[in-house]
Amino acid sequence: MSHLPSVPLMKRVPPGWWVALAWYAGVLLTFLVRVRLPGEYAPSVRPGVLFYRWDGLVTQLLSTALAIGGCLAMERRPLKGLAMVLGAAALASTSLSVTEIPLAQFLAADVALYFITATRPRRTGLIALAMALCVVTVFLAVRLLAGWPAGTSAGLVVALTAVVAWLVGGSAYEARRHDETLTAQAAEQAVVEERLRIAREMHDMVAHSVGIIALQAGAAARVVHTQPDAAREAMSAVESAGRETLSGLRRMLGALRQTGPGQDGPEWEAAALRPTEGLADVERLARATTAAGVRVDVRWRGDRRPLPPDIDLSAFRIIQESVTNVVRHAATGSCRVSVEYGPEDVAIEVADRGRGAGSPADTGFGLVGMRERVALLHGEFAAAPRPGGGFRVTARLPVPAQDTA
Image 1 (spheres, rainbow, N blue to C red):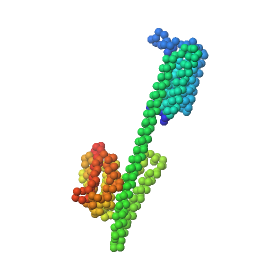
Image 2 (image 1 turned 60 degrees about the vertical axis):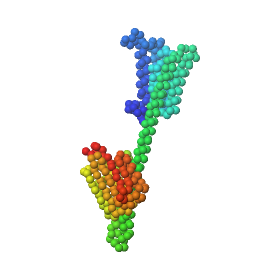
Image 3 (image 1 turned 90 degrees about the vertical axis):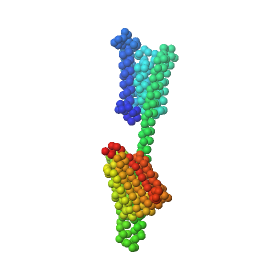
């Protein structure tokens, strides 16, 4: 039952069953208060003349049958079901020799009113409340107009219980709406975060590869006539980098389009889109960049150890983007990459002696993406020109204690 309040038992049991239980509890209470129970000198309520007669019992059976019909209709046509339960409450009171609809007979109507208000639109809940109050009002009005005694005070109490049931149901309805809103907002936020993550991955992958391709193509163009072998080697590197980039893009786009059985959940999508790069690929990155014409010296400090996937990936992407900026903007022939494993964090530094201040390396989305990565991991990030010339990017990524053991 997806429309019921977030109570496990109420989700499993249909509303009509609860209404039927309330009706039978009211009938049982009606009989119990009209017999002398242990410890009592007399019954709490004196039975009427018709109560034990065949016509009184038949009236009770007919009202019970009408109430059960209302319970069966509660799921698909709630207002019709409530009308039948209200009619049963009014009919059951005729053989009790009372001047109002007793609360025991109205208990099922209160339960039905609660479920209608809690699971249906507000307009339906208001109509249900109006129906309940109208039945009580008409019952008392008929007795007053006929000159019969009318239990006005008891009728007001019964009407008050209907209002309370409506208020409690409305509160459950608002709570469910609030939960649905929070769930929808969380899902929307997850979609936005996933799009941003994919955008960062595509930017990092494509920007680095295109930078290497541009550098190799320029080198090939300069030596194509004087050193054909070197030009051929450079163009082979361009081809290799291009194929690798296209393969990565195909994998990512294929994962986004995949909707096969068992592969359409958020867990599978996250696993399919998760890149495999990490700090173990820094040496490969350095070799490819060095072959393109910008020497990358890698220095390792501390005890190298496996890191959590998100930290390992982010550390590699920060280095990759920083090296890409050096290739594209620094106008230098070398840079230095330092990776230090600390007891509670991993520190990264990428420094060069290029143009530094005024370099277009601080434009675009590269530094923004790196800063976002570090912020998501609650780390520290800095990118600024070096005092002696050049540019330096530093990042510190904390490693959770359970992952350092």
